[in-house]
Image 1 (cartoon, rainbow, N blue to C red):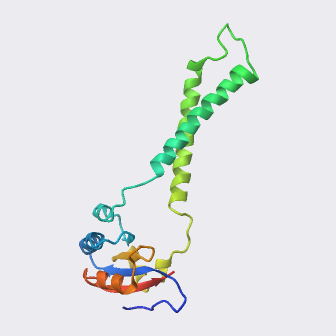
Image 2 (image 1 turned 90 degrees about the horizontal axis):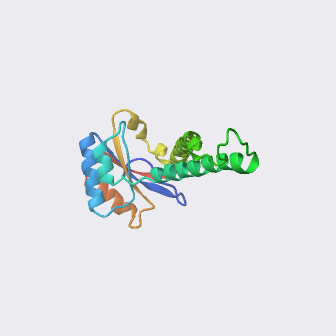
Length: 184
């Protein structure tokens, strides 16, 4: 392996491989996933849809968070108007009923959209683990090129079948330009 290996007692984030082209990293991702590796991450200078498919990254909890926020806004907005109009400060204006649900529709819609939007932003930030000013892959010696013209694949140490030697061998067999260990 190239680069520095973690010192004794230093935990390992994973084993990283560098690739020269998008096609190489996509093929490598498919190969390691087919070999049974489940905790795999990739870093590229631009989004690659085929890589998302190869790594099976289609599952997101953000839609459920947005649905929950929207439902909370719906119930909260309607309940607020009901409380104000019927319980807290009922006004008899022109003989209309205190619970005039038709008049409650526009504000209820607005609170639904507001809460859904806020929950989308907060949910995305929390589920992505942001803000995170530091990440272990920044320790990889050649990782600075990830934002320009290189593509990286990491077999994470949290994978149940992780073994340093086996991970490095699996990545070398995919045609990696460079393979290194990434300390935590």
